[in-house]
Amino acid sequence: MGNKDVMIHLEGISKSFPQKRGSLEVLKNVDLKIEKGEIFGIIGMSGAGKSTLVRCINLLERPTEGCVYLDGTELTCLCEKDLRLQRHSMGMIFQQFHLLMQRTALENVCFPLEISGVPKEKAKARAKELLDLVGLGERLGAYPSQLSGGQKQRVAIARALATEPKVLLCDEATSALDPNTTAGVLGLLKDINERLGITIVVITHEMSVIQEICNRVAIIDGGQIAEMGSVEEIFRAPKTKAGRELVYHEGANREAIEGPIPNCYRVVFKGGSSGEPILGSMMIECNAVVNILSGNTRMIEGKVHGQMMIQLPEDEKTREKMLAYLKERDVEVEEVTYV
Image (tube, rainbow, N blue to C red):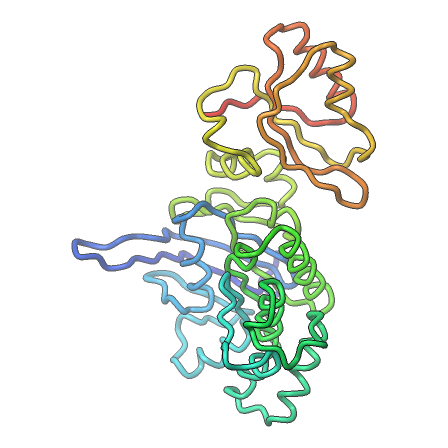
């Protein structure tokens, strides 16, 4: 990947916060390259450092060490005035929307344009265009208190796009939304990426969000990048403990399946027909039942994608017969141990 294709380049980023005694190191020597036009995911558990990392990208937090480059420009060496100009190239959306309650949807989207000195009528026209783009053309005069959570987030997305940024940073942007609303907002972000070619960085703790829209993903653990790669390769075979924790436990009740479980297998579905009950047919064929520990599957264009954790019977012959049945149907199966 040549540097001309890189939109965001983090080089040796470390961040410490002073404490009463010494300091707390939240990021440790993070190197990351995000390509132009991709949707890149950064995922980690609570306290892993992902929100600090996104705030270092737009320098709301100044790294203790390292350099941040945006489209070839080093941000870490800029004076405050030049940095403010560069920040216009980065829109940001948050979990809690951060809308101005006393302003209408239209006025909220106009706000960053007013600050940038755009004439009022021009700002209004741009804001209307953007609210149309996010599907809220009919709600220009609505106040945030009159909008649903999903509609508020759409206003926030329109506002983030107002200054025509090169990058959209989404910090847990769907965490406060229900699953249906989340799907709508993620679909909108995908559409914006395709239509406008904007690079999107998604910060989340939910693997399902990453699977839905990201091209590549970095897993952050203890302030460091644990692993990075295409979403498909990390979902299919996470290499690190942090990766396995995020992927295997997706959609699971962790407490219910703590500790080593014998004969536990992870089954990965990569697009089998929705009308084909593979596990049900397997149980009938093998005349034995399996214990389903957790599942996270969904339909994409009539095909099943996702994973299940299942416990197979103790009898070795039955187990082998079941595994052979699944593998014949192009279902990936691997034995796992919960710890």
